[in-house]
Image 1 (cartoon, one colour):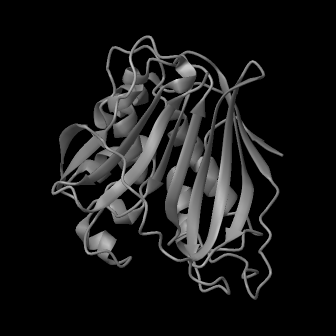
Image 2: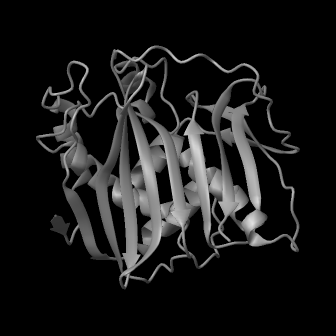
Length: 297
C-alpha cells in the first residue's frame, strides 16, 4: 500500500498521462490483470476555498455546512490517475471514457473533518465494446467508512465478445418534473480549475478536436454534481446512493433539461425514497445521463 500525505501534482500527472501507453498486456482472449496496489491519501481535509468554488460551479447551496456529496470524487481523482499510471497498468490513460459512476454516502461529511481516502482497482470486465475497469474509492473518518464510490471507465478495444442485442422493449419511466439549464462555453474550464480534471476534451474546441471530438464537452462528473445539487435535498436523507450512466456528451455551450420523478412525501420511509432522473438535450430526445438517487434505510 502506498500512503500519501499530500495530493499528487495534477499537472505532472497529466504530462505523464499524455505519453503513457500501458504495458501492452491486454492482448488475446485472456482478461488483463490490473495492479493490486492501493493508494491512500491520509489525514486530509477538504479545502474551504475549493468547496466554495465547487458549490458555485455545480449549483450546491452556498449556506449548506455539509461537504457536497460528490466532492470526495475530486479529492480522489489524482489518486485514480496515479493508479492508471502504474507501470503494470495494461492500457493507455488518454482515450478512456467514464461510462458509469456510483456514489454511496453513509453519512454527511463536515468540511472540517479529517479523512483517509483509499483507492484501488476493484474489477475488470471484457465487453463487446472493450474493457470496463472499476476504480473503488473509500473515505474513512476515525476508522469508519462514511463514503464510497465506483468509477467505471471504458477502454475501447476490439474483443472476442459478441455484440449485445439492443433491448427496444424497455418502457421509459414517467418523469413529471422538469427544469432547464443553460451551460456556458467556459463551463469545462471552470470545473477543471476546481476539480483538477483538465482533460483537453473539456477545455476548448481546438483541444477537443485533437482527440476526435467536434467540440469541447462538459465533464460527466459536473453533470452528476449538478443533478445532486438539484435533487439531494429533496430526498431528505444524508445516507443515500446516487448512481448514473453517462450517455451522449454535452457539447458546449448548450441548453439541457433535467427530468425527474418525486413519488414520495415526508411520511414515506427512508428505505422507499428514490428519485429517478435523466438529463437530455434541450429538445428532450437525446440522453446525456440517466440514473437515480436513493435513500439508504
